[in-house]
Picture: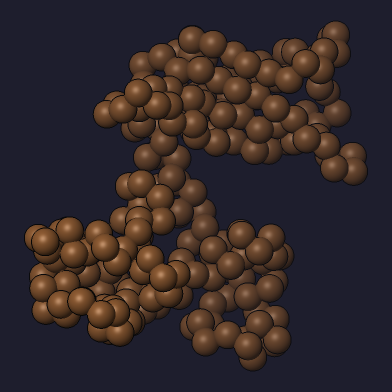
Length: 213
């Protein structure tokens, strides 16, 4: 079995193209301990495994990321996936029960804004000349949110990629008219993704009828 095949016996990519892998046994997700963990598996050639990781561009790319950058990433992930308030990172109990580096609320927001801009740039680059738009809504309390998605064919497969472009209230939160939603779509496409509203080929929406102006 070649080196890459040996890696394939033990690693699964979390999702295609993510560059993040884990052991098939479900352990060893942390890259600093992953190869050490693999030594516990019968038939694992440790030296060949390290070389395979290098050839796939995985080991060195991960190990060179500074720990404080990893901690910032993990703090953002914890906050977003766990649906925590921004103040969570400064809460005494959070600091007590985590070994993540301390980060201030203000600093976390700064990094989240930088991350958002990077994600928006990458989405803009992946949008094809023509794409479909999908729009949906959600109301909590007195606030109505609009979710805007874009979908286009993948470049290297027969599937489709769908991106969340925006999830936010309308610019005028008390107006749910067709024009208000049109203005929202136009604003998102032009101001964030540098796309004109004429670039989309189809618009899919929920069955709720928009209110007349």
